[in-house]
Amino acid sequence: MEKPAYVMEFEKPLRELAKDLDALHQKSLEHNLDLSAEVKALEKAIEQTRRDIYSNLTPWQRVQIARHPKRPYALDYVGMLCEGFQELHGDRQYNDDRALIGGTAFFNGEAIMIIAQQKGRDTKENIERNFGMSQPEGYRKALRLMKTAERFKLPVLTFIDTPGAYPGVESEARHVSEAIAVNLREMAMLRVPSIAVVVGEGGSGGALGIGVTDRVLIFENSYYSVISPEGCAAILWKDRAAAPKAAEALKLNAATLEQLGVVDEVLPEPFGGAQNDPAQAAAALKYALLKHFNDLRSLDLETLLTARYDRYRRLGSYEEAGVVHR
Image (cartoon, rainbow, N blue to C red):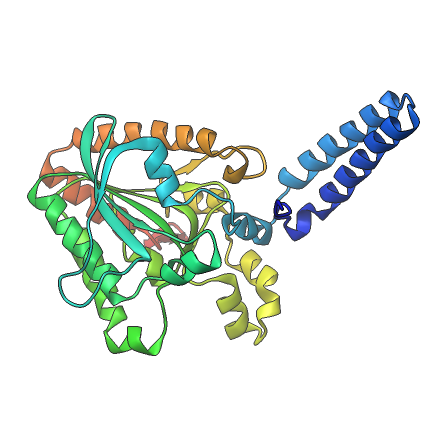
């Protein structure tokens, strides 16, 4: 039996209209009635409702789209954009973290190193991949692969999709904060071009641990934030139910991130989200990656490192009475 389609809370008016349309079609067949005018009017109402909903999404609604279970994940994009992906395992210290994957591949005929956070499609896979929340060994594996890329002069492409690093006792015991901090330092000095793409959730240091790159791209219905909406709501309002209010306060909107200089480009999605047409989303990503990798390859090493340093120094700058504060 086919599972019912996943419907987000704000999409329920569309589902009700779709049910009405199905009932109208059924009535037409059962009673041999010409209801074409009613069907056309209802189809027009559905289209208008769809446009009203998706053209005026709130930050919280975009978070819901970012978490859609049918949304393309990192391995989906790798499959659509790359050839010959060869996964590499283990941090050579403790274990292999399945929430964070990596390996070599060919993109547009050029060898690259891919590092990606990967969620699962069902309960079993989500448990295996720890719901996309990496432990220390995941970040240490990522660092090992970055250093391998540096040794062989391979550009690095990372896919960010996590609510945050895993906060469990074992993760803390193995020093997850130290593992992330080391990655921040080493990525800042990496001697090859690097690009990060936020394809879904980008939460806290868990995302930043593979996000200190020359360019940061984000899909329009993804988010990149210091904390998840639920985490922010629990701290500020003592109630996780205040997550929609927290999403508004955190400005979880890709366009805002671009205005603030946190990301370098917002990638368009098919109407209603990347899950509605993964191939179209992948095409938009490919176009952007080709453009940015070409730009970065044209820079000599000293210019590349200086530009990366300047990019992150600019974050958090603001002007007050003509004086720039950093």
